[in-house]
Length: 447
Image (tube, rainbow, N blue to C red; front, side, top):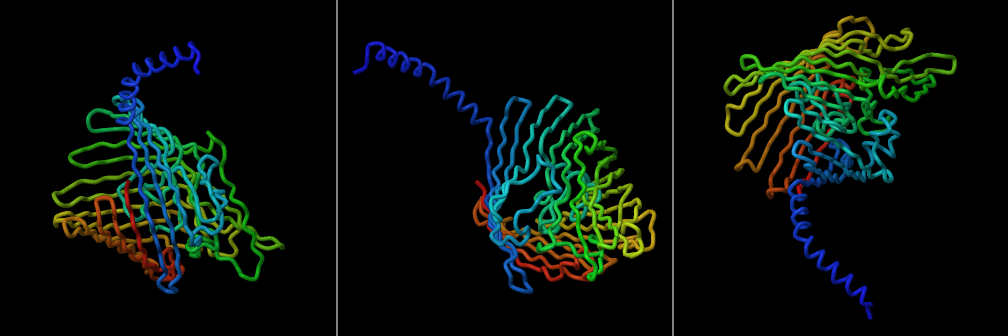
């Protein structure tokens, strides 16, 4: 039996809960109103056309959470849980030597990896907006290829086949935007996260073989590849950037500056009686650029210009002392979009890259030209979307053709069918994967 004291305690506690529960329920309801949770589950299968081999067989779960901490502060987080039973794109457990300790994935065996994709706080201080934390930052107007969109490194697990949003590597960043007047703004960026491109291992499906990306080495001499000399000083090796944007006469204009380590390592070589040693390292570069766009009825004209200092190109000259040649690089892109046909989008772009201090032996041309064409059409009351993207290099006569069809089976269920076809010279950026053509199948559902 309960004592009299225990009896009184139970009665008193019950009475207190009775008084507090309405308030607790109201607080819980307010908490739920501030919370927004969603997630996407996707299944993907890729089969190589030439060999009928399964290249990719994965399930990806991406939960996303947004929480309104205060009227002017919102927290956001995105996690990616990915399992690939094929284990061909990243065989084994990647060492991730190109990533900082605070930006590495968690591997469970060889088939499963977990990654905190984004985690940041948005703080609105009237005319000053801050985003602090792990995030993606996008500069420029180009699609398919990059000129100014270099703030985040990229995973080349599937070369450039995925959307940039999926292949970018988010970085821990302080991003501040300040409104100036009604039409202008200034953006200031500090990136203390020393993470760089994820390049495929030599045995991976999309391992680089083009002489533009990897040095051409003799097969009869011993070659040793050293660990990358990755910057690691928190402040001294940070990247910093600034961008000003404004509207003038219907034109959206920007001026951009970025002081950073170029995300692809410089592959220097040295020769000794023991053989050839390749030592990857990272070099600083100044990027100065500008972007513009303006709508003319159904047409949109857009473009980017960028100059990068201190770029390093591989040399095909066997007598070169370290196998690389230093120069500046000037890049431009001009794009034209058209939406004058119902449910149709057409976009064309022309890219040009010029090596400013060209020397004989550089493994690419002084002037390189490429173009892209994107066609998108919606059918059956926008339940079916067909998309075709062509990227073509005029110098190497190689390129990539991507086609995808998406069918909205339910409001939150999409069925996808795609084809990725590479063509051209095996020494080109795209032609190196001429035997990696594939058909993809996918199912995506949201919760």
